[in-house]
Image 1: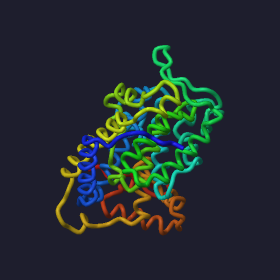
Image 2: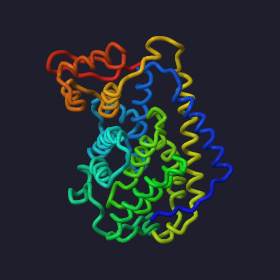
Image 3: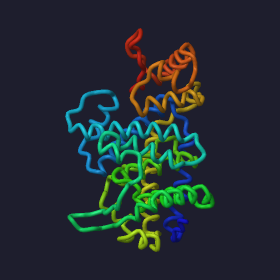
Image 4: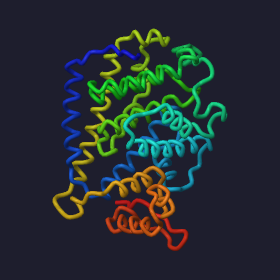
Length: 343
């Protein structure tokens, strides 16, 4: 069983205290629905851009934005596919948020979505069949555990995650991130999958910050520091014996810095009392919005599939969100679709 060794220092405690205060502010902030979901859309763009950039994708953030809008981008096909896959994976994270825990099948599905069309089909959505070596300029930096142990180690990690509820959710997310990367269960796509799992775990734990936290942007701002913080040993055995206070400090500090940015954004978008400001969206409406945020647009047929409702009901819900100035109706007739209103 995963048994991480670390200490809660005064520095970590201060970060966690500030994070909790910011969480309360964000949770209770009065935001126009259209502004909140525009904020979340921007965060999804930053997540897709940052997480793929860490792996070497050269697309700029404005190009990632264009892809979400359905526009054309001049770039390598694989780089475009990588970003599009990540948007689809973010949609899966939203879908899995309602679940109480992460499963092996969830992980395999996320990996398949992230890496689909980018590697051989035999490596998509399956644990690696052989050894894994992390290199830097032909120098071996890390050797992962034996492939025969991978599934069991992932199962142990998921079991630890569900039985360690006494650990602060932010620290637990950081440890989940660390251990998943250490196991390195896939031939490719481990980093992207690990960051998505971290996000999913935070969402399921209720520390989602209204799904507006761009944590991956912190990693991408200094990739060398990110990799150095994770590099606690050259073999799996060494890493399991390592003291992880340094990694936890790095992770929690990054979380804190990300929440500070979000706090500034939320304060700038807050509105006073008013009917639309205090309006609460129901679960069905949130599911529709999450779909648009991650895939760029939605049709009434999509709503029928997502919610399992008749087409007339789907149309009613879309019209309601249009009246809230959250969605914008594009075209008419059979080709009608809806996009997020830009403010």
